[in-house]
Image (cartoon, rainbow over all chains, first blue to last red; front, side, top):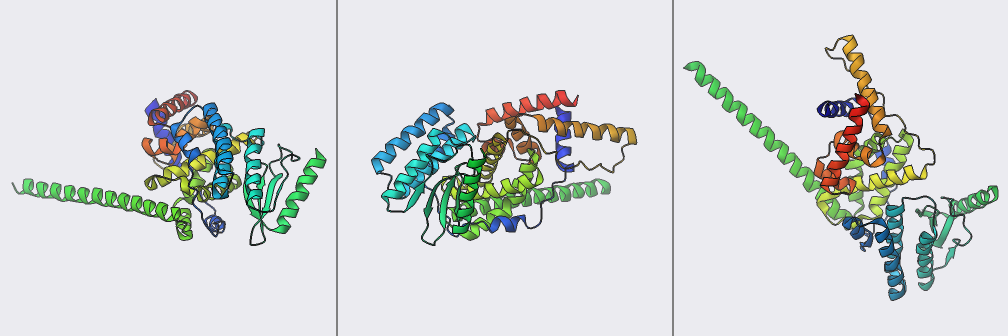
Length: 178
Length: 207
């Protein structure tokens, strides 16, 4: 019977037509960032590769965050990497279901890094609705005039000033409607 | 005597032909692995052209994976895009350039899982309609067989995420056990056990 199921699965794979929309590849290519910067610190990867218990992994990353932030003073790209590792780990360990206090810690440490670097950043984390995936948690201006934002689902995006305003308006509307 | 000689010649020709086909296949696999390695190295150096090449190599497979695990057409497109965005953002984490495919499937799997978790009312989009085969089966046989395939398709959609992922990677994406285990981010033994559990469930559903 097992062989039969395997045979049926192979047939199913052949018969199920999944045509890809023409133009999808071009749409994806249009999203390629102008600069691809390899992210070199591999805390999260090491933890995933070790396949340790998820709570142990969570404890490890929180300790790493605290130690590295205090040791390095959150300077430069190291702080950025710590934030990214924290973000990835939270997704790996917990999936995503709204930002929690631990995730906000990672965003706040990013904010503090930016401030120490002299970058004008605005942190909305204390007031933001943690269940709103589109809420702006942190924003800062880039040299080219656009803004980098971290949203409620920890998704990071580069937006124009107009887009940022729309996001903020949306965030306010969401807060009002709740 | 003459017949024997002709048969021996035929066998030699056939054997040479098979050897050539096998060598061609190995050659094409080697070339594909070399290409993947080169793309991974160039991506790690931050080359934009390599990112474009990565899209050309994998966008269809990732889209098909998303459809396979039960996402609708539009969501599958969005999640395919997100998979590539994450790949570019975290290319520094790809330590073994030769495992580019597995790494990308792993990201796709995580992107898909995060999406399912965000959905309060999980609703599986049905896969594409199964096309009826026009072979020599008689009408009642065809109908019975077709129904089995539909039942199997529905049973896959109802599997827990990890088991569904295993089935899709191995049977729908045609990855080997080693590649699929890498793509699922688990050890080979764990992957085999997931596959077995999934097959057991499917067997019950189909029978």
